[in-house]
Length: 399
Ligand SMILES: *[C@@H]1O[C@H](CO)[C@@H](O)[C@H](O)[C@H]1NC(C)=O
Ligand SMILES: *[C@@H]1O[C@H](CO)[C@@H](O)[C@H](O)[C@H]1NC(C)=O
Image (cartoon, rainbow, N blue to C red):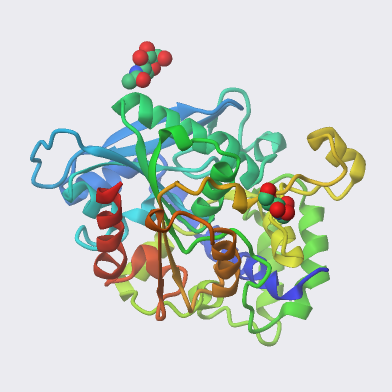
């Protein structure tokens, strides 16, 4: 059952933690934590920006940035809210890294939308909790993307809906598509949703392509990750692991971005520099374990404790419940865009999702694929404004 190729995800992400450690050091020197995303990345481009906070039902205090209007400052009545949800190991900065005419958050604001940027628990803007400390309480890190779908996402949706009195458009990238698909498949949040755009969509991970190292890492990683327990990821131990992995034949740690995400077609060197200033943001080790289960088993289920008793405690059944994509109501407006060179959101896995959606209302589903795109092109490519964001906004305007 276990499917070695998917090791790449975990492996490649581990490699990145070398960079992470460096960044953490820099961060404490520059004290970037104190300067929020609004001040450091939005106001500097001439846009108004507001920092908001929302508390989840399980106590996480999450940061949310709002860009209420475009650069021209023209008041447009009835701006429709759009919630942007970043992917794994990133945060809201992922929508702001390019110049304003190339970054989705700014483009949406300039085109009349009220833009809200979510930050998942554990990232720089979202490290608060009503009782737990990310640094001192391992249980702060006791979550996987199940909780991002069942707690973070509803908290953001309800907050934005409450602030604006309107239903939301949604844009997710990568893991930000998986959490939304999971919620929609349980028919959650749909009463607050206008339409959803899913960039580099992830539902299944079992065919994630990996050119090298599948065999190498299978058992090794599975065991290592379990030994790490409940933790922030990356952490100190990860680095040693990474350094070791980078010495192994066939692993190219000199071009991490391509190793991890595929050969992105259209990133400028300044975009890449900007990305690496914000990448990787922390997540939970448990989230990685959950993702590696999906990769190695090809499953789309809740986190598996791999012990019947423990699964019984959590789920009242010996195996974790599945997320069933065929349960997504057929009239939910969905815009999907995927890349044929994407090493994380593999085209074959996207194919499985599309097969689940084959009975979707034809006028409610737009699917586009970009032959030249890999995983990061969707947020950082120089031409994404024309080839992805223009059609995305046209879709939003229809719904
Ligand atoms: C937002 O929430 C507050 C407090 O719960 C409530 O009084 C208010 O009516 C809500 N506003 C909207 C637009 O839903
Ligand atoms: C998903 O639901 C459909 C329809 O209810 C069912 O036929 C299918 O077996 C389910 N798939 C899984 C993986 O549970």
